Amino acid sequence: MDAQRFRLRISGAVGETLALSLDEVKALGPARTERVTLECAGNGRAGMSPRYPSMPWIFGGVGTAEWTGVPLHRLLDRVGSKPSAKEVAFIGADRGFDSGVEHPFGRSLALPEAQREDVLLAWAMNGQPLAPQHGAPLRLVVPGWFGMASVKWLSAIEVREQPYDGYQQVVGYHYRQRAGERGTPITHAKVKSLMAPPGMPDWYTGRRLVERGRVRVCGRAWSGGGEAVVRVEFAVDGQWRDAQLDAASHPHAWQRWECAWDAEPGEHELACRATDASGATQPATCEWNRAGMGNNAFHTVQVTVR
Ligand SMILES: Nc1nc2c(c(=O)[nH]1)N[C@H]1C(S)=C(S)[C@@H](COP(=O)(O)O)O[C@H]1N2
Ligand SMILES: [Mo]
Image (tube, rainbow, N blue to C red; front, side):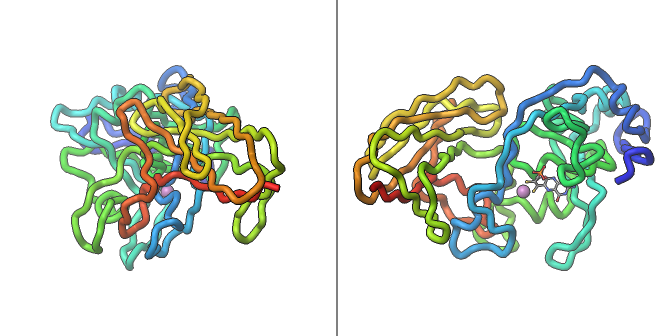
């Protein structure tokens, strides 16, 4: 998208309809930077069987970045939402088909959620201008939610009195057992942890080869909805122990954890699991759902120690 010609339109149940240039968006108020872990709701889909024919994510559909932008509520305050307003819809510039239905990528949030101080209209990532693949020139960043809420290539905002019925809102992003059933909308990310597998890999199987002796295994843990991770456990062959966990220094960014392991020769299974402040923890296997969403089963790694 051409940043010079870019206009963000805001309309609907507002006092004033606007079309703002990128500079006008930046001038809405002081910039704010948030460190946010964004995870795709489909991360882990490859581990659910039978597998839905979408991106076959294993573990890689997650990352953490510092997003700089202006709180969306400054724009909402500026245009003045009507008392009847209930939701805010965000429409990206990209269009496509899913199951034969043409639609733009659009998502909505309830008004109070959209008014949170940390929901940003972001134009920078890690101190650099937003890259095209991450939504340049402007994207929404919704901390605590799975990635689909953070609409990229943002082109229009609609303040609504009726629920938004876009395809990605009502058909996509639900936990469902069967096609066509109503299901449960996907919102916040779930509690999850990953480890950096120690040693070196056998490429095809992913099994790791580790030298005997003291090994420091480290990883990251996060949760959604602003819940901090309060505990990470690490297991060797099913024997769980507490790992050392860094405090949550940013409310929506993953936390580092580490655990020492005295590796003894043989075949072993390593695992990690996190628990958040609400008490939610990771299951050994995640309940299947049709689109392969929200798989937060333990991360396990098979290791041969020599
Ligand atoms: N306009 C638009 N925004 C979008 C999407 C999209 O397809 N179109 N994908 C969403 C999904 S499913 C995810 S997981 C995140 C990915 O953000 P990233 O590419 O910066 O990692 O963007 C979200 N925003
Ligand atoms: Mo996603």
